[in-house]
Image 1 (cartoon, one colour):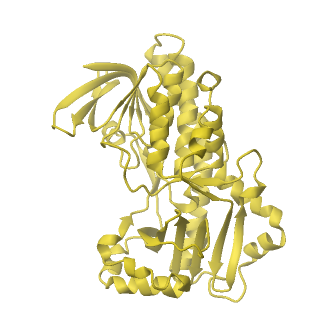
Image 2: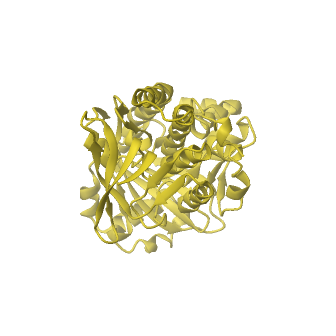
Image 3: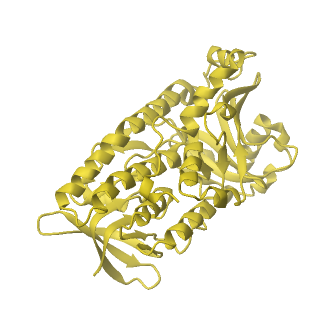
Length: 414
């Protein structure tokens, strides 16, 4: 049975950040990624200002800057009455006053390459975790892994298992940790459309009575999210895809002629939105972070940033114990409790904001009764943002930095 100090399940942003930080502290860490590579159509390619600062601290900022990317400095929403600016990232403190849109596979490969330079780091691909191992006292002491190339199973023993395997976490399910689930008003239909040089840049939101569209500028194309009522995907797909194309061209006339790229419903993917969080993020021998601990709504696009901040806090607290030598199980469990205490409040605050947006904006928009969506003037709150532009820095800070940004521990910096 292979053995390591920390076994990280999942090679997404949280898992790769945690693995990189711990390895730089000399901790033996193995990251298990079930896919062969990172080349998948990720929905979240945002690298927030606080993450850009973290990469600077790790000496990776210049490498990231060389990757293909777009920058978002402002956020606007287009109502029937016209465009309204809701956030201005140029008012952020610090060096990075933007959000970078970087293909997530490039971002993850950058982290994987940096981690591979550390002798205590190991990344296993095609390694799907199918269960957890427990010792005689019920403590998690490793995972069961299926090799997706040949179907063979093996075990990886570890002093600590950290689940970073997303909202459908196998490890979380195996641990049976209690979860609190919140209702959501929408799901999202995702698809791509070509982008022209004359189009707007950055993030585009379009709101009209009964309809909401979010568009993310990826350079050569738009990543588009068309919101539907939660559970409304089946009803939408009973209609020809021409119905969706017509709605898009009505809301965004400058897309005319390009919606033909949606040849059928096979070109549209469903994101079934979830919003939940574990009541307890840990069990003996186990820590759960990121989406595995708290599935986030796409509102604000903050899920990746929150997961990376979880990983940074986890590396700091776990590193304090693991770098001191051979820690007692009780010391590791205490460090896991400190991670949850550190990250609990920002998680609750962000999810509270998302729930408020669900109730006050999205539910009402999709129900066709959102004030200001079809009116000649925007709602009063948005009018205030236009009259007092400095207030646009507040939502920008909440999204791009977050309520409790984390920084790399000194021993991981370069």
